[in-house]
Image (cartoon, rainbow, N blue to C red):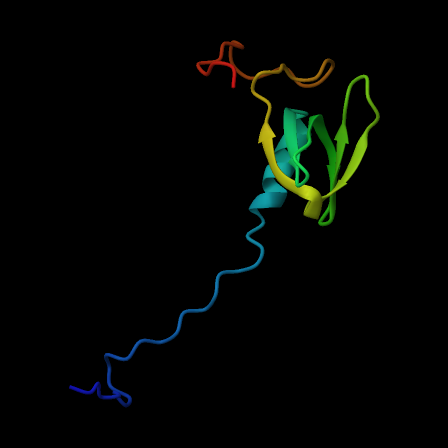
Length: 108
């Protein structure tokens, strides 16, 4: 049995538009991390992991500020992922952490 092509009937589906390239969620997340100076782990594409807090970002790179080590400017295409470093306290002199400081999660 052959399929028949429908022509201009009410049951034909219109093609969906592709999702947007930029949802602005990345910028909002990086802004939140930078404002709170929350410690993060950045895993690079080569497998190295660096720790610090995000001080600045733009559409191509992230500035990672570290204690006792040089600051890094990391191109985003070299980043595998960015994760909040829940095992570390907020940076000294930074905003106080919310809540009582007790975490329900154990070390990772």
